[in-house]
Image 1 (tube, helix red, strand yellow):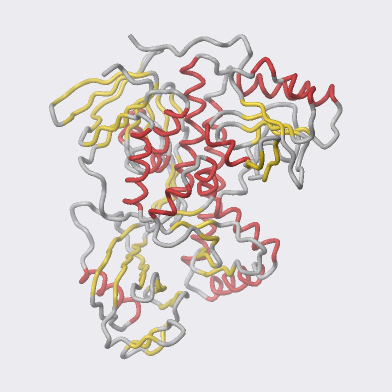
Image 2 (cartoon, rainbow, N blue to C red; image 1 turned 90 degrees about the horizontal axis):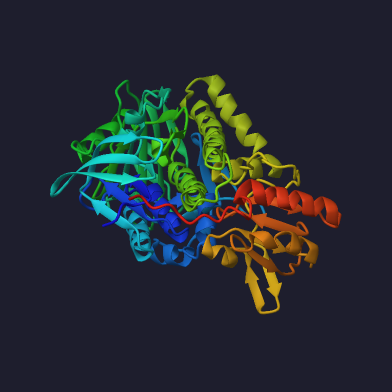
Length: 522
């Protein structure tokens, strides 16, 4: 085959999402994955957060829901640092949840990327990488032996122990917490009494509440019902060793039950095992997400000390990066565009790190002061405003990128709302317009002068006019990753709006004269 434009190392959710987004932008990715087959053991039961909305904008949400265990839903409750937050007082929960085990998600994304034309090679391990001013190389060991691949850029999506990050010499400083978390999906024998409200009555211990955490001097025990028959059980114990799950030493039922016995001082009989896993928590973020033509995304760039965060942040990394790489490869990227990937996603990663490290403080304390902190936190979250704020932080929906142009509208840098739109051709939505993954200028107030100001960029952006019932601005310039690059205030003057619009178009989508075709490697 011809040389690819971008080499992606790692075929997890982040790498596969990046491959799909690059294909939508007309770029040829090559995905190299060390494992020969798709994983069958779930590393995660599902995912949640802002990526759910992005998948809606790409037209993938129906496909995701069809593969999921149950419908996509807004979460009425969420676990945060060892306590459960009740989100039901909010008019709309800010957290969307998808019960789609990671192997199914990866299979779906693999199929989607291949349908778009991405090349994915499994059983191909990257041994070394190099770069110069014009290209990158990857030395690869595949089933047929050693070979070298060449491309414009290489992106490490190869997980927390990223070889790409190590070979690029990018620091991954942070903390490994001395705790072991063990998780099991199991069914119980008839000898275990389940009460009407889902609580368990364990022999030798008594009643244990479902959906809450039992803290003892030896650790934390928690459980909840995934289905009427399947129980999700977790223990947390302090242990000094690195307890990230070892592919060669998977957790056994004996290890799991021993942990339950140590924490609770009682046994939990198990009838059938569906899944067992162990994991530790780290708080680490790459010093930089870019080193020349090498870039990092997903778990290679960040590790958060809480569950349910990594897939969301990693896939959003991919969507942010793809269109910027494509702009550079196609020859119209304005100066500094690719550097905004680090600026924006390192910022988003730091926001995720802030709330997950706060969870560590809530979760790990075992003294009366820590109990008081948890009680006070729950009391504060009984009020709607702090509850909503915490919910949007968990979802990553609170991220607003710093503006890079003179436009200071409150929506600039925020995720574009999924407005219902009325056009001459009928009803549509922002999400439906976003399926092409192209930039959009959306005129919501019939401002022909704004559409005229963008005409020089019409080969690069889509221009639409529509009306909406609750107009947040006169016009929106929406980037391919669904974040707002510019917005016109209601009734903003022609001169001001036109000037800042053209500045934003130049800042994000280059000058109209930058029409060079994509450069191909010889």
